[in-house]
Amino acid sequence: MKIKAKIKKDVIDVKAMAKHDMMTYDIAEKKTGDRNNANFITHIDAKIGDKTVLDASTSQFLSKNPIFKFKIKANGFKKGDEIVMSWVDLKGNTKTSKTKIK
Amino acid sequence: MQRRTFLSLAVGACALAAVPASVRAEDFRKSKPTAWTAKTPEDAIKAIYGKTETVAEGVTVVAPDVASNGGAVPVDVKSDIDAKTVMILQNVNPESAVIIYDLNEYSIIDFSIKMKMKKSGTITAIVEGKDGKLYSGSKTLDVALGGCEG
Image (cartoon, rainbow over all chains, first blue to last red; front, side, top):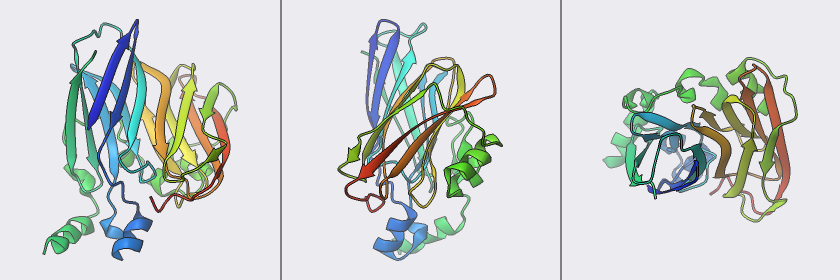
């Protein structure tokens, strides 16, 4: 997962791109003949230290290699702090990535 | 052989049981499973929030008037409302719910995603206010090339 986090005054701008096929049930059926082959990210979160700054439950309808852009209040966070993002998909695979806030 | 293993994992259906402890807060996929199979926005909103009355103000949904690629429609949702959750839905895909954000003390409602739209239709965003009201905004758009096919 590519993550970019930039702090400007009291807002942190985050842009993350996960690498995932986000295969819908319909596409799974069409391409593999089996709806059970569908797999897509179902939950993603972001933490700075022990604080959760993003928490989203997601569906098959996000685009392939989904992007997540969000803004958070900097409240005490600063340049150099690490933001850690994790996603989980329908089949239970997970991925965690991190980057330092610039 | 790989495919058989793959299938047997899927048959369990409760793949969500493997979620690690670090992914927490309200995982709406677990707590409100019917929201994700609801076909219409009304049903999905009812499944998550228990009601469908909304106030059509305070929520801005930005998306192109004509999306050239239905597989990746850029959508921004903004609001200044003091809120608990934000939900994005549409009314043209097999199911309506797209994403639900569970907000926290650091949240600013200014989210951008790229989503699939099977054909022309309406994208709706619901902001669940801390006052208990559901606020909504929407954007109707044309989709040039349908997108559930990726």
